[in-house]
Length: 409
Image 1: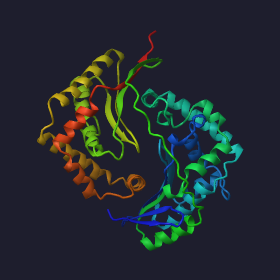
Image 2 (image 1 turned 90 degrees about the vertical axis):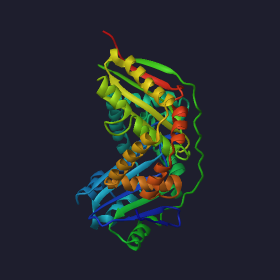
Image 3 (image 1 turned 180 degrees about the vertical axis):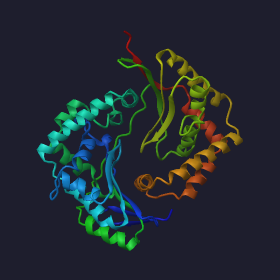
Image 4 (image 1 turned 60 degrees about the vertical axis):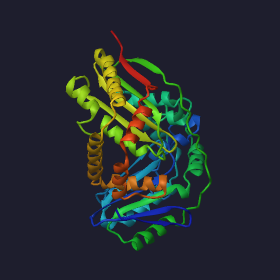
């Protein structure tokens, strides 16, 4: 897909992706997330993402929310371990309105004490709601074990104690340290010329004060594999098992994405779904996921099942891993896996808001954006030898596991 990048004097990059659609999509992506928090500030990045919608120097909460919704647009945001993203979808005429609002909430929020106290209550409810969903809670608890002693293990939402104690001073300090202008992308996919987008972007972002202070992120250590069982008042057993693995920049990243898709990724034809759900009827949900991060990665498997079937599910998963290790993939099997993965990526291009965010992330992570043809070529270039090396490396048995087990009685 065609794109252009224009860099402002303060370091903010403007990503322009032209399209003929009447619907436009935009995001502002900031290379700052929960991994950048201090120990006592768990939940701070996510809390800031909530608060930017509450009050700015010229708007109250209602005015912020109505600014785009009054013209039928959609405005939202999210926080991850490494990013903060604000995004919007809107009709073609409202580009100026959207970018002006992005500027206002990101760079001119005031974080008043009364709004902070109200929003702390909202986040505390969110934490409580999350803990009531074992399929969600187990993911955070698992990462806390996998990355013990490192900020990657923190729950993005924080804890009730840390959220309650967050201060305006914490917010200002975090933004000053982590909202670096050379690590911010403003991306727009829409029917606009580069000249028009550049002029509007210059109007709203050229005067943002430059902040290019270098920050150091500590890479996590690889902790010894462990096994944990937690009894909870739940009806089913929920299990996660996995390991630290390749980062965004590892040469085997594409191969592991391909292996994940084959083993337990999207679709009903994955190895795990066919064996555990279709053949044995053990688990309604059985899936694997590979999440590459800037200096590490996570490969993990999740399933939920009746407690008496949990051990069998574990054995079947291990059996499928061993089969891949003992009987290497053939060229035909690899070709089929590549075709499936390429088709899914091509269909995913229809999700335009997801596409522009992915392109902005690529620009942050790699300082370039691969075309679809390049992505497909990289997938095709993964060899049988590559795949078998990855299988033997990732499926080596040194895995951490966590089981939420129903409490008896």
